[in-house]
Length: 427
Image 1 (cartoon, rainbow, N blue to C red):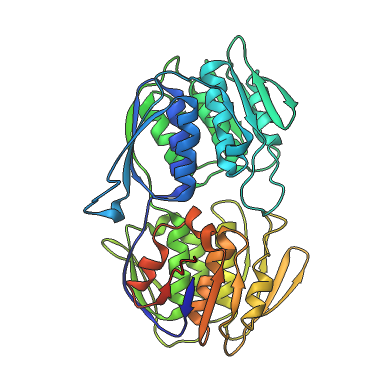
Image 2: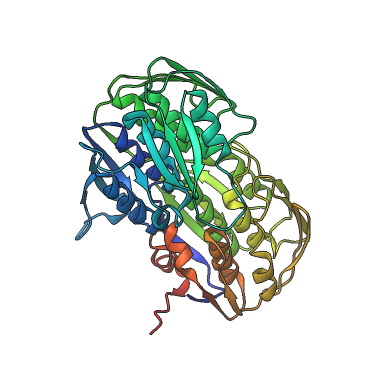
């Protein structure tokens, strides 16, 4: 990808459906033999891969809006029907490419009484073990073994409602237990549950399917499982990480952009941090407007935390922005132990960043200079895009295929607001 920096962004960017909600919602189709219709599904590489995995289990999938969609910003509509589960194994060659696909474990176990799932892969941003997923399912009565890199789970007499106490907050483990408990007899109580809006979106869909769920958005979720879940129609909520990413991009490049479809309420902490840098963030009738017109960026101190704290998925984007702040910023990463791989690439553009353990000290510089850089993971990739928008001259980002996992039509959305950005097709 090639970017010529120094051009402000002005106009409108439509926010896509949330990847981190769409993936577990698609997986929830395994819980019912009826049709589950999901609207506003983003067109992403991870969505395509998960569709392939679900088809492997026997899910019939049809897509509206795949071609000739008159309103592509509204996403695609997926119709998923898992009338018969034909295979309860999720093989290594599929699961190793995307971590979220491991979440099929809970629904398969709840519906079929067995599952054999490869240990997961995905972005190389830390170990992210699955022990909490397994802890939760064991509490529901599952017998679990590890055999040749696979998790082999059984519940011959079915799962039973129980109290699940997580020693630390885990979005993935909360999704796994939430979906399994929706099709499990009795009441399940999840303590120290993740509070992310995407958890709430999945819970809302499960309620439409027939489960009874209380406490969503708090640390304690109660699920009264159903003997049978039905089909439903659900619209995926807007992507708060995409929203935040474009907000930081506007702050970096300058200008004024309305993020159409965005919900300010989903991102209060990140928007609060952005406002402390001197950027204006206001709600509009159609979304959120972000503006920085000539003012200097003020340095800030931020620590990533589980929701509603500052999202780890926006840490790299914030760091890119702070490379040109007027002073020294401090960013502490508390969620993942290896999420500073973008630092050395930002340094190639002239950034002044010092690392010590889980903390990055960012000293603002007068200017960044375009250079060749390499993306290492999804969020690092987009931080380099933001830095490229600020840099003098041309920045070339290699391995941008990471971007396609989490951002729909990124270069088109930015170019539509005045950025000089294009995808370079090799060969």
